[in-house]
Image (cartoon, rainbow, N blue to C red; front, side):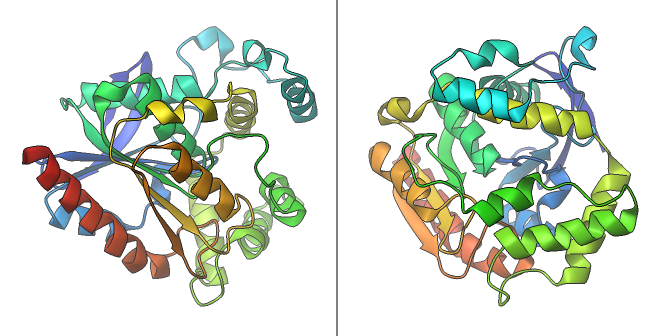
Amino acid sequence: MPRIRANGLEIEYEETGSPDDPMILLVSGYMGQMTEWPDRFKQALADTGRRVVVFDNRDIGLTLAIDDPALEDRVPPPMEDLMQGAAEGQPVHERVPYVLDDMAADAAALIEALGAEQADVLGLSMGGMIVQLMALNHPERVRTLMPVMTTSGDPDLPPSEPEALEALTAEPESETLEAIGDLAVRTYHAIGSHPDLRAPDEELRASAIADLQRANRPLGLARQFAALLAQPRWHDRLGSVKQPTLVLHGAMDRLIPPEAGRDIARRIPGAEIEIIDKWGHDLPEAVVPDLLNRILPFLERTSKAATA
């Protein structure tokens, strides 16, 4: 896959569709490599005349960690210290290698590096936080905004269910591929969709093993989680977002409850929101038609409005 320099990083990316079409940038969440996006989803977007770009966020997959090689081996503070410091109002963003603002700058720079002025931006989970910060910090690069299964960052919102948060931060019983696969199955049983939508266990296991074989970045995962915890809050800025916005959330999301998505939609003027039945905190093939049935009409409406 190709790689391009943007915001001081060498970013691994992939395109589907024509480079002459309007770009839609898909931003992955915590731990998510660009391989998490279903081919069916990307191709359906491309078939409607979109240049679909996916990429590895910094510190995950095949994208370099940080723009300063001297920080490559830097270990972030313990999660508990960051959480306590943030709760006490300490400037914990000064204690980590980077925050989500930096990851938003990466994505905005990637749009420019690929020769586009703007893109429709869609982000999952942590990626949904990143795209909100793109709209706030780099509005000239964002044509439409689609935060998915994510939060406004308001600390007063309902928390994750304990079992879901524990599953997200759990470690495998050993470093074997079998243990990695088993952990993925347990995780998605805890945070994923209803069995009617959730991917089969063998598919979850195989996907986790393939991602590990593609890139094993445990220190990168720790720094990404630190970036998420240390990011200065942005919920009180969302009223300034001008881009057309579609918020998507699963009714069964136990990691980021649906109320978090509703909060984003309340804060952004004119935002639309769709809550999808039986969907959790995952991206199974079975939910792709539901997503497309909401995303494609939104893109069509906003494109017509922009050219009217």
